[in-house]
Amino acid sequence: MADVIIERHHDDWLPAGRTLTRTIEDVLGDAASRVEHIGSTSIPAMDAKPIFDLQVSVADLDKAEREFAPVLAAQGFTLSPYRFDHVPAGRDDPRELWTKRLWIRRGGPGPDVNLHVRLLGSPNERLALLFRDWFRARPQAVAAYARFKRLLAGVTPDVGTYADVKDPVVDLVIVAAEEWAERTDWRP
Image (tube, rainbow, N blue to C red; front, side, top):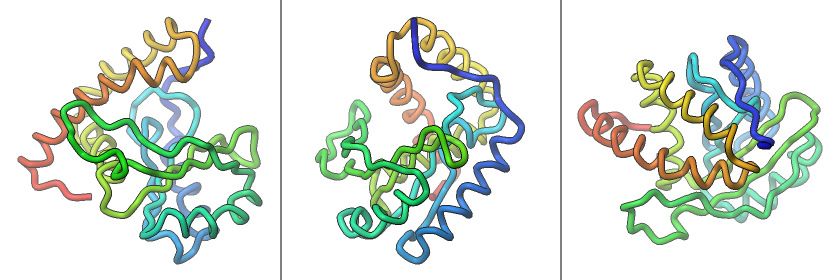
């Protein structure tokens, strides 16, 4: 039924993520303020889609789009029309604060990647890092979230529906993660 495949955690995901991060840093150079491995493949023991999520933080999205396009195309990436992240429930931020650019690579060269380019200091840049770091600090939550993802993948007809149903659960995780961030003085 679903085209969403959730795999058991692979021990090589973290080192592969570090290698991908260094590769993207080298390719983009100083145009990228920061490159981070984010998402489920960046969380120890987390089951995930076998697609690496990387986040590139930049000062100017339009400039980044122009400068990154030819360099990333040479690496097998295509620019997605997707321009905004989901705004978590309860947030009253203007949607423009959640803008991004998304490059996708499927079928090589190298592993499949979603490359999220976000504004440095934006709420969506922060959320991606907080999500990752909260799960890394709360390994007891990893199994429950992974189970939810496996069950959801088995009943959703496509990736879009999977993401739409998963978003409110991510919103709940972020509520707990924000409380943790405040208690621990976490910063990206």
